[in-house]
Amino acid sequence: MGVTEAYFDTASAAPLHPAARQALAAALDDGWADPARLYSRARRARQLLDAARGATAEILGVRPDEVSFTAGGTAAAHTAVLGGLAGRARAGTGFAHSAIEHSAVLHAAELHVAGGGSVREVGVDRAGRVDLAAFRAAVAAPGTALAALISASHEVGTVQPVAAAAEACGEHGVPLYVDAAQSVGRVPVPDGWSLLTASAHKWGGPPGIGLLVVRKGTRFLPPGPAGERTDRTNDLPGVVAAAAALRAATTEAAALADRHGGLVDRIRSTVAATVPDVEVVGDPVDRLPHLVTFSCLYVDGEALLHALDRRGFAVSSGSSCTSSTLTPSHVLVAMGVLSHGNVRISLHRDSTDADVDRFLAELPGIVADLRAEAGVVSL
Amino acid sequence: MILETLDCRGQRCPLPVIALARRLPDLPVGGTLRVLADDPAAASDIPAWCRMRGQHYAGSPAPHAFDVRRES
Image 1 (spheres, helix red, strand yellow):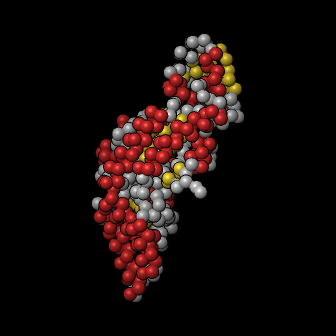
Image 2: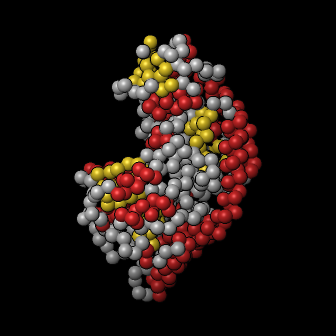
Image 3: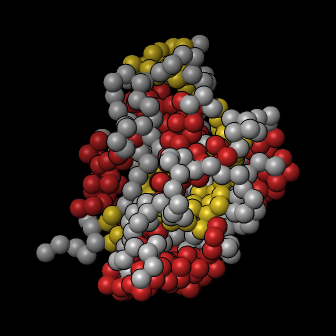
């Protein structure tokens, strides 16, 4: 017999919300026709799509025609960066962004540089919060066409000063793009941005559905051939399910944030007290409610992940040995914190107190065993 | 002044940091150990170790080289 799996990696992928499962089944039956056609069945599909867009817009506090759906969060981020830069090509080719953006944003930035553009990367402090003065300076620099700031770090949870960044961007007429993948459906995102993206997979919707919001008046020229469709995905049932999950997640968000916040507080204090030589990283207060990251000195991150997996804990890590590129997390490096022996825990709606208790009870022994095997006890 | 050089090139994280932790206590207080390490994590993990252990990170004089001065 195996142990019950405690799934602690919502920041990578949340399990499908029951509301999304119902909506998906209904939309597969009722929303398979091409919504652009004119017969009754097509109109039914169009109604489902319009309702999904309307509900999403209402939750985000934007107009329905500012919302489009993409084939996943990564595609949404690529489109936001490249479309935002292309739309402002007359103003310049500079792209200002924090050093802790998601790799999807950094990959789009690399493509921009390969095409002759330039980037201004802004550093963060030890807690993972962007250097606001440096961000302001990067926004104000001549030729800056677009600025990007993640709403909250997907790796360490630190909430970013989006409102202040938006104010700085407003002063200089530079549009702000906010990657809100870890915030939408959980915590409010401050106003003042021009472009925003999110990913349904992170709020309990199906994988492969992203969200792109372009506020009215934003100069935006999306990459790729022009088409007449608003959306960059044809997965109508997926979009309907994503909207249903977003509505459900938003309704539950405040209560869940309370419960998760308490569990994460407990993880932060207990890990620091029971595991020797551990560094709990990210802002202890101004953070996402459901996410916590720590690094264990002298411990191999990959070995730690496998040891946790054998005990039924699914977590992710920013350690280099766990990444496909064998480089440590650019977020941990930018913060100047320990990158090896790293564990990220992100809770979801079905994570229980018992799951967290069991994790906290087993972690000290797992880390001690790994250190004993490596012969690094009392170093 | 560099009293000793520790060659950890080719070693993956966290081995260079472990080697540093083993070797530094052998140096006199005030002495500097140069760690050669080409694992990409070393550039952030060696300064982080110094901060956690109260030792002084004296910078990277060349690519893949990191100087640590024993403080205590």
